[in-house]
Length: 347
Image 1 (tube, helix red, strand yellow):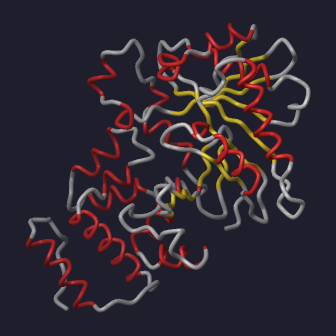
Image 2: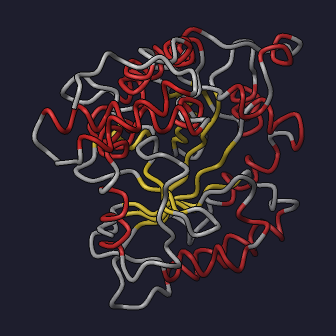
């Protein structure tokens, strides 16, 4: 796959299954692999003994990687924001950070991923618990300067509102979204050299990294996704294909996937707005950077319409060929279902 970074994440907490996490850091590999990152809320750090046991096991698994595997670094990313703090407080995260300051963990990297919210004291509370000093927030980054001389980076992302709640519920909480969390502001981190919004080719970590390849996800069901870069209803299965090349070939035979990788979901929203005017509003009024594609392609009619718009562009560019009669029949089908379609020439 040509990975430079392998991240073990989840729609939950990976360290609920610590043995799998240990196996992951011990075995994951790719020729260019530079870093292995484990994302955790640190919930496992119930006390010092448990924290030390779990960290020792992870680090031992990492240090015992086979000699023929890539010499990748290990990073523990702690998820800690207002929502986590309401459930488990800042103590588990503080305990992990303190433990990583002990001998034997010097080469293990650690940073905190939080959510940028107004009136949120979570990072300040963590800093106070650690006895550190807090720097100002710059480019969505803040640092906790610890008494032992270490610095812990805190990286803020924008809150994906519909992923955890809705605007009505958010309005009842003592926190709110600052301007920096709005899609049109935070989304600038995904803008490439061409000026287009291309999350499929951007690693949006503390330091933005524009990729020669693609930002891919492999879900627990085996499906392979390009981050905001393919129709979520059309994904290959890592369990079914013979190799990575076959998965990529499957994705790249889809005009919609190619368009998303080239131009990003914001451009797709503009295309769809010709037939579905609400697409422009969805792209503007929501901060759903990670789920914008799903929202734009929520129905079969939207998916077909988007594919046809992309296909038209690729046909004009000479990138593909297609049976024109079949294409026109597809447009007619959409029109019959009440979708506003562009004026078409007679085949």
